[in-house]
Length: 245
View 1 (cartoon, helix red, strand yellow):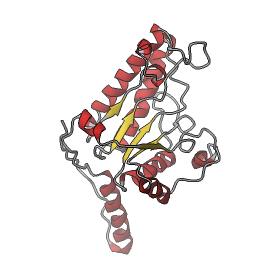
View 2 (cartoon, rainbow, N blue to C red; view 1 turned 90 degrees about the vertical axis):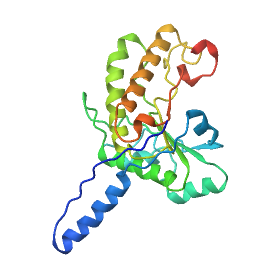
View 3 (cartoon, one colour; view 1 turned 120 degrees about the vertical axis):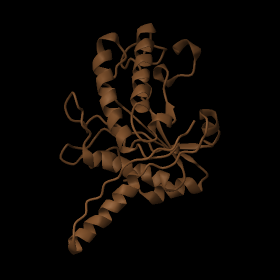
View 4 (cartoon, one colour; view 1 turned 45 degrees about the vertical axis):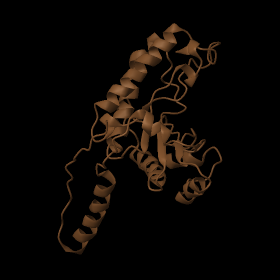
């Protein structure tokens, strides 16, 4: 299932002391973006390695902060800034999977590109690296997003935004191995309607299926290890009952 991929890496070469300093920085960036070899695991085999999980909630998924200081969103709901020592403490308690919910709304440019704020994307990657560098599995997603309301009227704009966001995320993390998992959406549902938590309706479930398909196609058609990456797709409201499939 898992295949190794090669990526051409380019370095900026300058002479002199300043040039050597820049080269050191480029080398570090290349190392972060290098395509790592993925183990040949089936999805079932990978899931069997996921023993006990912990969610870094109300942090990168917090919706406060300001455009002038996008990183302030991380602590806007009262949680401290995430550090690698926190992740190590979670690992010491026996967890081997950390879910890192991320809200991208508030950090996006205008349509049709929906460019993710570079400072925010860098911070997400930094936290992901805290997890990956400690030999843990990491799950990142789209969280607390209200633009993908599952209705036929909203399907096309929601699909366009979802694809644009995941293309950027996939490109940034293409070199990561099987320890990084993508979750397409969190609990997609008809927010603020009577059926929000009661299974939705056939229209909502059909739209969610179409958005899930767009997510999977986007990841599979991107570069690096993404064609083989484990992805998570939700049912309506991420419920497990058979009447919402």
